[in-house]
Image (tube, rainbow, N blue to C red; front, side, top):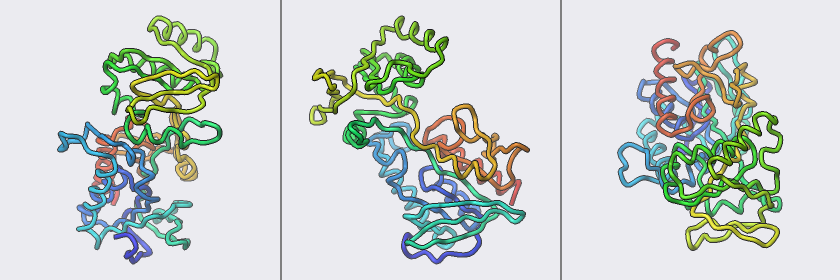
Length: 329
């Protein structure tokens, strides 16, 4: 579909983001006989694109890679090409709301474009923060691409049983992650703060409580800065430190949180956010503003408050489109 799309001025739905949630929203809207424009930076920007094994996807008992799953979802749109315009690589730059719906500006094929729709679905996702080594963030990518370093506790925590785990991070998020990993019975858990004091910046009362919990759980930490990683051929996570020492783990886990929560556009549209920075939505996926649900604006997938899981992304997309069909359009 990409490269052969004739754009319209107006659609029933505009979906910003072509990850699992955005693609499912587009498919559901097309099945309900609506026209849809999907603006997608490209599959490689989806959080699951580099995941080698997804084990919680119905219908794939042997697991499936994130890349393959996205390919299948894109392929599912092709029979509906008359209704679905899937443009990629394209970047949404602005969205505004008026009495008739939404106007979206985006760049595609090196040209600025504008389209309108009655319903706007934000499926922009979030971006994981990567460890920065000597100013680079790509050092850990090979380990992440092979599933040796993980990012989602509820997606991959089960695979930590009986393994030694090194948690990257220094703040309360990393501490809570290390403690939560114990539910899955790893052999050991250690926090690697990469040169930062453990719980640096955390309110002292909270920090003291977390230190006690970590001590009781036997979770140690290393505050020496990281110089690099090794062990990819052996499928292990070996961490080299600037003092010349090295530690070996079966798996790494990121406790670094989010680098980008893509909040600029929902803020410009009047959305409210929860304490963790996610967009607040109601049970139907409608974005919540200061005056309640914002008519015609839905937020699905990782951008919204709630669990960050692919089946949940699909469910949120289904609920949003069905609500728009039944109650709004």
